[in-house]
Length: 392
Image (tube, rainbow, N blue to C red):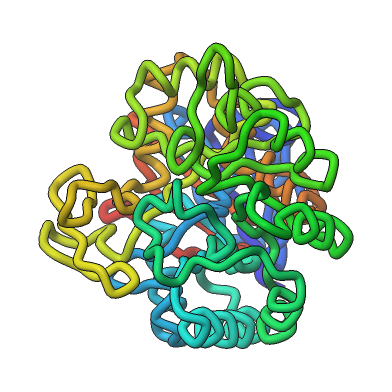
């Protein structure tokens, strides 16, 4: 039995925040959590004593991420997914959805087969892939963004069923344009099979979004980007994201995909009850600036952003702990709000809140220790030390 204790730091548990608390982990699960005054010495346990300036939060669940460290889910290799799983704990992510993109049927199927197999056999030491996010090809050409138009197809229930079987039922979220032919049929099928239907890369009107919600849509992909914007006579996808409580809403908080003021506006309107922070990052994350590949397209990466040759934004190089810092700076939100947006909300949306998304007895010990500058000092994935900053 592997047991350790993290002691003498602020603990943000599901029910309460302990200014000076402790967590006991046994065999990868949280066994105890409470104030340090209640901690009882266990001679068989390793004790990690930290500074009261540090705090521990539940690991982030990044439900929209394509790649990192020169690896991408579309590479369709075990090594690519393994590299992502090893890299993401550095930024405080302990679980993620391997995200595909609009590509040829053969390329998507290769990625799905690979991810389904990987998920079934993954190890405990690194970030856990909790499913697949199918972003496209069921999207609108009018709002394609960096998704290649040549491979866009109309929503297709039969095709999706085939893909879900190939993926060993690991597709957990699908980005689609519900206004496209058969879009509502696919949304209804997804709802009926427990898969999240998300509005994204969509030119839908507000009334069409209302129909999509009735059909079973409960999510919005990367707010502001790849969607019909807000107009005083046509609220569009953005208006629906602001107004409809049925929708969880993703946001890329890098200050580039949307200005800081628009992040604050979205936060004020949507609140931490429905918002989910994502990175939507590419293989270029954690690499030097240069030119990299995205679905066969060259992507130019500098210190802050990734763009196609025509200047179109192409995903991000955002790290999750920077998304946390940015959001707190732009919105003045609390750490409790951050935990909702990075852990609790995605866990609830993916229906895994029984084992992830908060620091609670019985849940996976997915834990991130932050210093007083909100830098990641240590990350535990299911009780295993997956990242430790030097000199900690």
